[in-house]
Length: 454
Image (cartoon, rainbow, N blue to C red; front, side):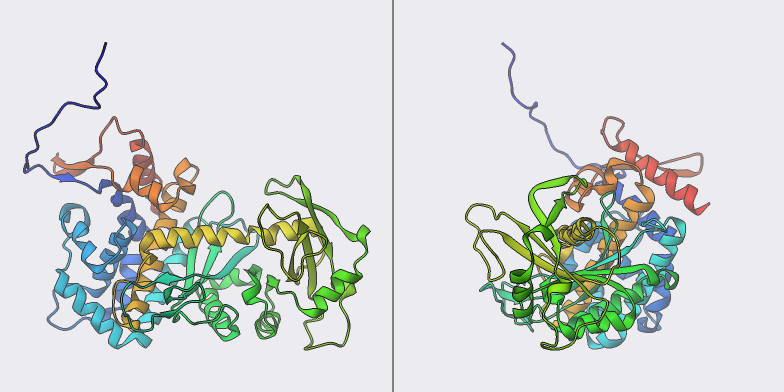
């Protein structure tokens, strides 16, 4: 009988070879160069470089973003990048990095716009190379809030509605659709007691998100949000901007009255994610059944659509639920089309939860700094790292399985691939292991980036 031990016992030694533990991270560096992120950060952050400084603030920020993209969750994790200078170049020391973040925190009102401007310029360049959304499709901007726990007494950390303690950032994402991932357009760091339906916060985040989009693309924006975004003030703001929206709304008395007046034959079959009629789910339009002249006026072109479905066992019914049906309601100003298609578009807002999960796997699981302003800077670094991953997947890994991988899988299979830098013929080569199953993706990614920027 053969033994089933996993491997022979190995002796471990340290050598002087040019081995790299994050050879796949070369895709991040090449993507940053392709979209001009390195140059943009250096230009936007030049005012914070002192006359005797050795390290460029833009390079430090890019190194931090790369470290976060590789899985880092604190400033000290930039040591992983520093330990591979032949791949990532010279990296500032921990004290230098800490001093720069402290300087940024002391001038946060100027630093945040500079970081966002550099991201916006890089995004425009990335889209010029290869747009992530078809020219005839919606640019879907999803707004959603999340909770970030704090395990120490940090500035701005407060009790949350889920009986935790921490922060409640509000985020905006661009959805690439089912064939891709998404980009983090904007984020607003808020104390833990911040409410989900604060219209002023939604307006601020949407303004920052729209500023991130190339100017010629903003006319085809569709804003999606849950019931927290369904306030009079925010919907009025969307109407004044002239953008399309699909926003969840709560069980107001007018909505309940419309549901009571809705005839049974008004319900139509809903669709699943593949566009096939979904068993036990139906949609109907409530607009004509809403009582007139009650409460604050809504935009004249707003439509109210309801969906009903049998709740799963153990689910708690809500005030809008009727006769054992779980009912959700949303408002939209998209004219025409089938109700089922509008409802499916709105339900795909759940992809924002995927983006939040990926963001928490990319530095947002915990805010590592004490000061609120410093953590505002950290949130921008997390957004930058998430965008760098998204651009790498879209530009370098298009039409490959890695295009839709979440950060954990991307790191495990590609970014943390080991490699060796060799010099031959006066040229340096990054040699990857031939037997690694996903080496071809890294090589193909470099080839595609060179072709896009040729």
